[in-house]
Length: 288
Ligand SMILES: [Zn+2]
Ligand SMILES: [Zn+2]
Image 1 (cartoon, rainbow, N blue to C red):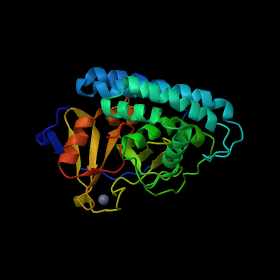
Image 2 (image 1 turned 180 degrees about the vertical axis):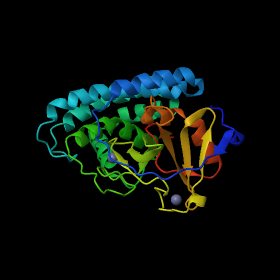
Image 3 (image 1 turned 135 degrees about the vertical axis):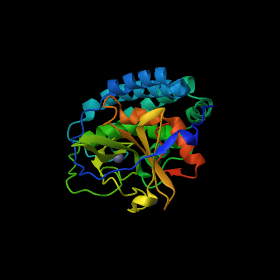
Image 4 (image 1 turned 45 degrees about the vertical axis):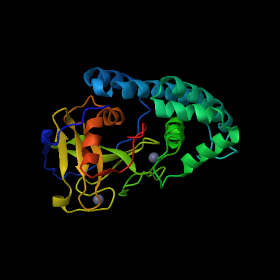
């Protein structure tokens, strides 16, 4: 379905050390994500189908985020049956499933139809499981749909909680404890500092550059980084100790990139890494 990028297009690049720094999480830049998805779909026709679906999801997420705003005052960040927004979420899940049925690629659409015929209790179980299963990345299509549906809620809950990232050095999201979906390089001096991005609550936190976020490997020789001509600002950061990889979006090379969306668009890099025996640290919103 998508053209694989030839390994010969890849060049190993050296990565230099730098001192990372935390940055405050901004308000969710939904419009920016949607616009970036439009731009990238024009530039990369092979990713157009995925990005068009993402735009529908992002528009839905934006609307859900706004509908959640009235619940923002003084609530505890726990997803439970006592939460007042639960009924709004369950109500919105019907609309989400209809949207997926209409706009998604076939496997997701089929799952959406199956879920549509399930009971509200089943939905609660699915959403609760997704919310709390932070140690196990989503695997089945239903898990990804729940993940995509709850993502703006996670971002919303996260926005209500002050996070103290000073001195935080772990490779797991400091808010929801999930593994990162992508890395980000932000300009610092002559180089770039790396941070990691949670694909669920979208927290971004600093993380040293030369260390595997999966197994902690620090030997430079076992941490090859690959880039491709088609995506010069995206680095495929691999680990030859545990055979995982994560893609990092290099904002020192392309300041206009939106990491969450550029990560989605660079599908050939995932295909290349997986063909070469690396497993992704955490799949993205669309299951890649
Ligand atoms: Zn998180
Ligand atoms: Zn590793």
